[in-house]
Image 1 (cartoon, rainbow, N blue to C red):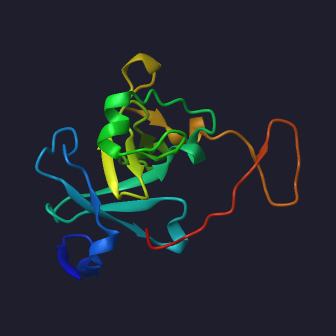
Image 2 (tube, rainbow, N blue to C red; image 1 turned 90 degrees about the vertical axis):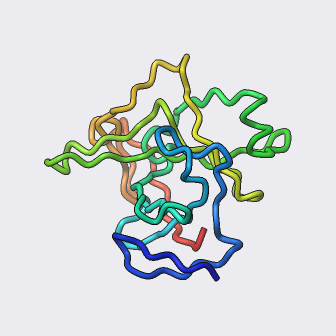
Length: 167
């Protein structure tokens, strides 16, 4: 077990096998190379990416597929090698969330997502340059109308049930 003295969550104990490694760090935080994902049922599908090597860092993240099911990631061969992705293997893509003074204006960074290989526990922040995405997409504007379980209406797509696990 690894012990983390987190600014936001107090003392955490995380199994070594649950640690995510970012060999090249994150943009602006080159020394932040180890993280863990923290899930809270009440906040699903949002999670916290808690720093291990930098316990002062914690980012709110959300699966990009939840925000934008049509999200396109330009993942080159170099990135696939860093992540050790096998041919055909799909990574988990997370967007970093920024919450301004008015939480209804929360934004997600679609330009520079965090890309994770859940099998190797390797991560890499990819700059999706040719995508036309920006660093600040207002989440409520990104989310279209969604059907609740059992409902079906024009312009809505079924919302996937959130599954919380100890990633």
